[in-house]
Each structure stands twice: as structure tokens, then as C-alpha cells.
Length: 162
Image (cartoon, rainbow, N blue to C red):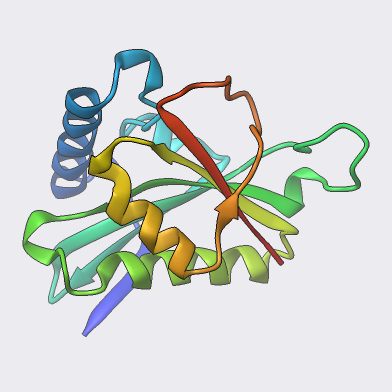
């Protein structure tokens, strides 16, 4: 059975997975378009980080970052708005539904925290097509820029409103 629990992004196997994730991002996108976080950034207090494991074996990870009010003039507060970060599945676990389980866990946590919405940034390249399909299947739609992102032809921004 797959278990999702809070974890330490500096843990050895997680650190390795995050390093692979960053290497793939830099191999796929121009450096200025890579917004993935390393293990130290994922340890910030504003980020909750989880791993999916089965019998102790790492299958994937994901995080939820608290953000400030996304739009001037809205009534959203930092406690009501977040961003999904560092969704990654190990190569051996792909196709087993790990990403769907992690995404559901993060969405459930955002609902529990009374967020009004959660957002994410992902790539426009073909490499990111499976991720975009996952998010669309789970109710995410494209949205305008949020947080401190800049317009980038290599990025697509998505949100799920509650």
C-alpha cells in the first residue's frame, strides 16, 4: 500500500530524486524558465513537503507552498492561496498512479486549510504534456500569472478553485 507522509527533502533518497528532477528541468527548458526548487528551498517554513512510499521505497514527492495574496483587490489571504511545487515520480513508479495520489493529497490538504485556490507552473514543452494532462483531469484550468512569475513562453500557469 502506498503511504503519503510529511518528509524531509534533505533525506538521501529524496535528495537524489530532487536532483534528478532539477537535472531533467534544466535539460528540457532554458535555465531562465526552470522554476523547480532544490532540497534546501523545499525546506523553507512556507513549504509543506511530502513523499509517497511503499514498504519504505520512495515512489514520488510533492509540496505545497503558502503564497501571499495573488491579486490586488481580492479578499484572498496567504492562508487561502498556495502553489504546488516539485511533483515528481520515480522512474520505476511511473504509470502506477503515484502522481494522482500525491496531487489528490495536496488538493485535500489545501481544502483542509480553507484555501480559495491552488496554482502551479509547468512547462509548455512536450516533455510536460503528461503533467498538464494530469492537472486538467483533476480540474485545473489555465490561469494568469501569479506570485512573482513573469511572462514566459515556456511556462503555463494553472489553478484549481474551491
